Every structure is written in C-alpha cells, then in structure tokens.
Length: 319
Ligand code: CUA
Image (cartoon, rainbow, N blue to C red; front, side):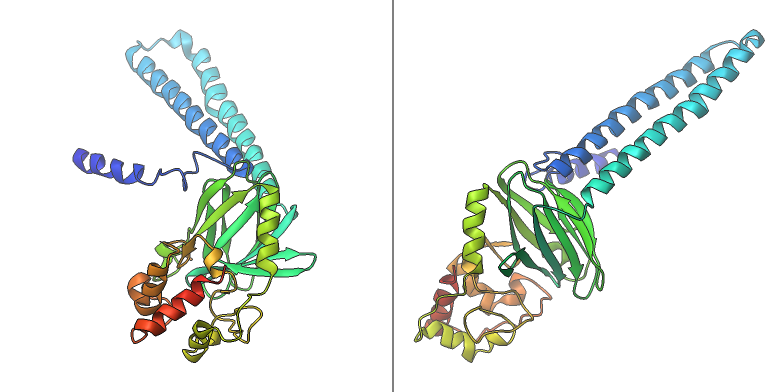
C-alpha cells in the first residue's frame, strides 16, 4: 500500500510543468481561486490539529464533574458557533469569486465552440467576427469574456494558469471571464471526458502585450493571399479538403473542420499537440489517425511524393 502511494507521487508531480499549473497562477481569477485554496488548506490543517489536540487532551485527563459547564460551553462555541461562522464566511467568499469569474462583460469577447476534438475560436470585433481555431491569444491585463458552447457533446474549457474551468454545453451558452496578468504561453485543455481523443483536446493560450495582440488579430482578419496558379492549393481542392475546411478569400468554404486561413501562424498542430512543422504536417495528412485517433478527418495515405510536398508547402504558407 505504502509503495503504491510512493509510486503515485512522481506521476502527480509530472503534471506540475508550469504551463498547466494552477498553483502558479498567471491570471487574476486563478489567483483568487489559488488564495482560497491556500486559506482552505492551511485553515483545515490548523483546525484538524486543534481537534486532534483536544481529543488527545480529553483522553488523557481524568473525568472531573466540576468542569461540566466549561465543557458544555466549549462544545457550543467550538462545535457550533465557530464552524457556522467559518463555513458561512467561506461560502460568501466563494460566491463572490464565482460571481466575478462568471461576469458577463469584458474588454474583449471571444466565443469558443467545443468540437470533437478541437476548438473553434471566434473573436468578436467591431469590424465583424474573426475566426480561427485551437489557439487563443489574449492581451495582458485585459479581461476577456469567453462565451462558450459545444457542437455535439459536453466539453470543459480550462486554462489552469489563468482560471476556470467552465462546461461547454450543446445548445446553451456559458460564460467565463479571464484576466491574464503575465505574458507567456499557458496551456489549455478539455477537462471533461468527451470521447476518444479527449486527452488530446488541447490548445495554446498565448498572452501578449496589447500592441502585439492587436497586430496579431488584424493579421488574422485578413483573407489568405494565394497566387492564382498555386499548385498546392489546386491539390488541396482536388483532394476535397475544401469540403470540410475554410480558407477565407478562396472558394474553400467547408464549415466542418478548423478554419485554415492562417493555419501556419499557429504554434501547434492537431489542437495543441504537435509542433507546427512541415514534417508533422505531412504526417498529419497521411497518417492522421496515428497522429490523433478517432478524429473525423480521413487519412490520405496515397498522397505521397511531389503531390504531398506541394500540399504541405501550401499549408505551411498559410501564415
Ligand atoms: Cu472535449 Cu474532453
């Protein structure tokens, strides 16, 4: 038994790589939950020590009828009044935190749609919606309001270092406010079992300075610039990729899979799981289900040689 517990510890610590560590919070909301956690943990440890101390003391002492009134008073204050006050105060504190992190306004609004097993991401801007996928960029020190929903099954949106988590429910909209206070790449993931590739449903949450964020968002809004005779784009269309994927500015307008307009500008491929390189891209196209089991995209094992190279070069040019 003891050996079993010792074996579990390294596995638990392996999760503390910083990027997904909610105890190293990089957001205002996560910070508040973390504060609550430490108060609960230290408070519980102190109360536990007191109770155990009292039990040991009572066990050792001789029964003394003259102390009966004192004992009753101790039970009333220590056993009823104290827990009521403490639990009541914690309840109020928790409810205030809950109210703040489920606020319905922010400096910017991002809609995220949970798909199997990736994330459709839509920035609402005065000029219209800007659609991307699997990577969420945020300006530091601004509150982003996330409006969350799901396409077919329940997912849960979680960026541990920034705050959350929040269920994404088909046919309903839930909201979550996140205010990053530190720049960096904070990993996000799906925190609710949603089927086959649940564990591979991840994303990058990249927090940037406001100016860099504005530049990025403006670039995302621009349609793809593709030469008329781009052989790679022709192969993309011949293979039917445009039936599922949209590349804005072309006649590829498929609504099923992730928008690919600025695919290569993302740091990761396959919803946060592979580095975006020509090698992983080629494998993604030919060995899709080895790269990510159960996904809807069919593999194209027959696409090889020059045709594959040209298609990959085209996809990597979508920046
Ligand atoms: Cu989506 Cu688990």
